[in-house]
Length: 87
Image (cartoon, rainbow, N blue to C red; front, side, top):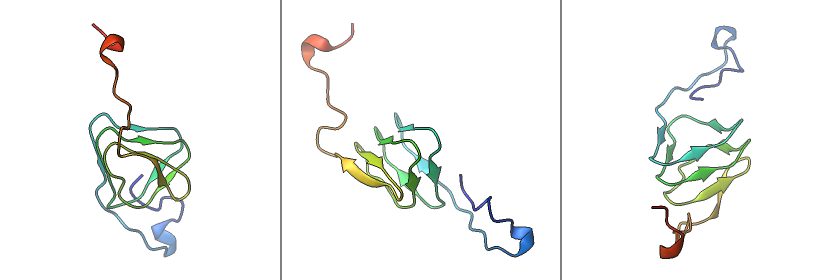
């Protein structure tokens, strides 16, 4: 997730290592790649098979190659109403 593993550095390909930050209550779905030096905010959803190559703010839905914000940050995720909250 944090480097170009498909291009071997022993064969002369450049590699870049860097930290990634994934916020609290964030969901990253199957086959998603997160590139180095990327921050994903809290309460964020990253769709399957996305390529996250830039920062994604909190309370957003991001998808695509490269991943772009599709929904949010206003009212995402949608808050539960008082009568639908769990006890």
